[in-house]
Image 1 (cartoon, rainbow, N blue to C red):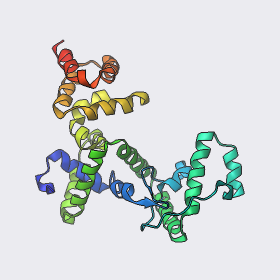
Image 2: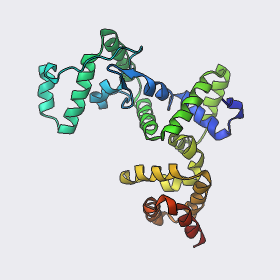
Image 3: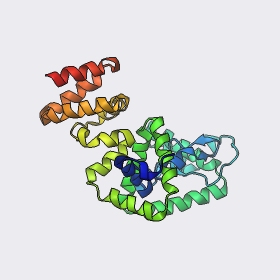
Image 4: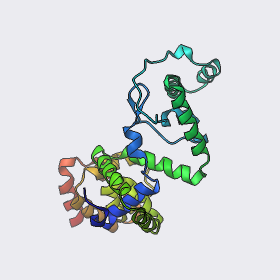
Length: 261
């Protein structure tokens, strides 16, 4: 594994995100089993605005043997009444979380209660930042998750003074550049060039656009960055739509054609 001294400056910024609590606990959360052997791939931070997600955010402190599923008939009456008044999608989510809660051992429930207290003690900005980082982690391709996990482990092994210096350097970056690193080590490095394309991104374009960007090589993203800088603000939405609609095998040709205009 490369030491942080040999990382490019951009990757050191990613290490800063990991250490500063942005994507920090995410590799550990994702790898920790929930009761019943379910990986914590759906975990999310907990707060007062997402109470029905709290069970999904709980992670056991130690691995446990798989347990049998609990019948939905065993749910408490007040919860059953609440479920009857919720939209079906929300009700199903709550049922899953309630069943998972019933499957936990007392120590696991106590550990989760401590997590809730800790989460509720955070200010709104910190909770929002951690929630945003979690969703960003979920959106990353698996190879980049693995890469960030390796970087997080390597970062944790560095002396505290060096970790503090990296956190300080990351905190000194412009806010938009810090947020850009939430896109991962590949897109984070290219974020300054791609920012105009990603700013004010409509929700329906977010996932398909990120999929395209992740599929591109670093050289292609640099070419796209040049194209983005040449595109006036009023034409960027059309550029995004055209990029998303372009088949992967034609992407390079599309870039060349657009750059030659």
